[in-house]
View 1 (cartoon, helix red, strand yellow):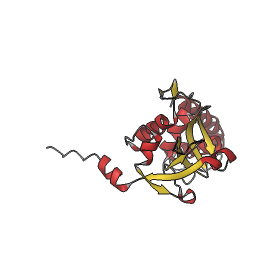
View 2 (view 1 turned 45 degrees about the vertical axis):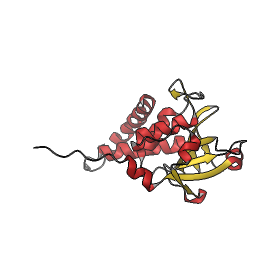
View 3 (view 1 turned 135 degrees about the vertical axis):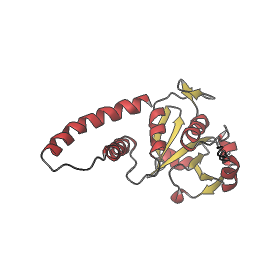
Length: 192
């Protein structure tokens, strides 16, 4: 998150100077600094990730992914020193959706309803059978054909249309309604 915060701060401060210059010559506007910052953050992430974020409903997903990009790959890893594909997916689901999912890509597949490639939505899961008859890789769909995953080169954003990933793509998946209901935490009763 530190990398993201610094990058956004630099980006916003650079644009802030331009905005101050423009507003000095125009009529005063209502205070919408929060909206402006969110818009700038979406623009920044959109450029870096290659996904149109103007219509996204989940900026946090992109922030969490951005924060992990570049983390080295390590089989069985689940820290910033190294993480594998299912560990990364588990971390994203925990931080973004407050859900605890299983740790293995095949086990995670048992928790989803299959989704066709052309019906994928941001936050859906993508599964691959790479040189195997069994599911061997998983990622989180971001939109516009892009997905985030921990590859052998580290956490990265790739495109489902790339020859390699297109060849090994198995199915998309969305957590089943039954599983989502099981995970819901009951609200605490108010005490007076």
